[in-house]
Length: 403
Image (cartoon, rainbow, N blue to C red):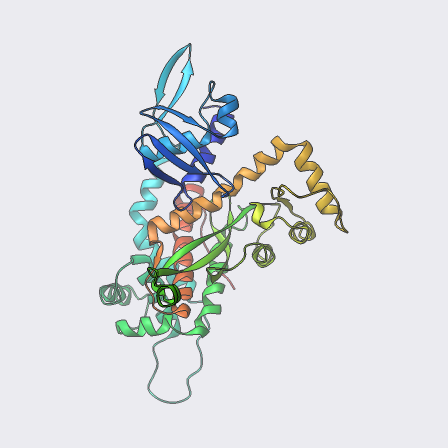
């Protein structure tokens, strides 16, 4: 596969990682969301023959399929077609993978997950107790919170995992299942979980230098009642919006911000990048147009990084006090191919969200917002640990955690 074909395939995979990326209108008619998230394209056809109304297909459709058609073919699992010696050949969709290392990581994940989580929570400071019966250690409680989230079991069914952890000397005592639920409901553990996200990413600090930023929604099990009572409309689920900064080589989450469903994207850029730079050397940052602002380009420049953020249609090269913005705008206009080669790395953030949702679910089981935020952070911690396990076999690293 040529570099251009590989790039289109990566873009197609990025499209598929979006929620509701492809919708079937009727037989032979689909819509595919644009990569920017604004608008959709119309695809018509059947079998392996499809047409799209996007500019790329209109210009080059007689030569090669556009990324929207590739995404639909991936969605329908029918492969893709290339021309060779005037004959059409069906090329199966395959991905390069060191299957030996991958298989080892998968087979040993559960055992290594316990060990790495135990090493991670040992860094949590234990609050002093001056009176009363001895409390269950905070480290043990958070260990069980992350383990429950990792297993995707209910509180009661996950209790057997806590007993197994006692047998392995990873915790001192298996808490009652209600203790884990009550721990997730405590606001004071939220900062500790944020810290664990940062610490769990640190073992890859020498590997990751390029990062991608994006956001995605996670559905809550609770409902918003306003429209139901005010307008008689069907009630809808509440959502949490999760903003992440992820390394583009391993897809480790270096930092995360959890907001309500209306949390704006651009203001989170500063927090994500600055906290990532505390542990990583940040060279390049890619993000979509929602993060396009003079301030965000200035923030990246002050950290010694280059921001690859596409400009909105009404943007101009006027600096308005920001020479970094002016330089970036002219680079975007003159060297667009080079810009896009770096910008497409943003799809790694979408791939990260797709992996988290597939493995740990896109629905949060907790009933109130504090517990939902904590549960979401536990998902990120569990995901980072699985990335470290794969890095052990694929990159030969030995994870060590430090505050």
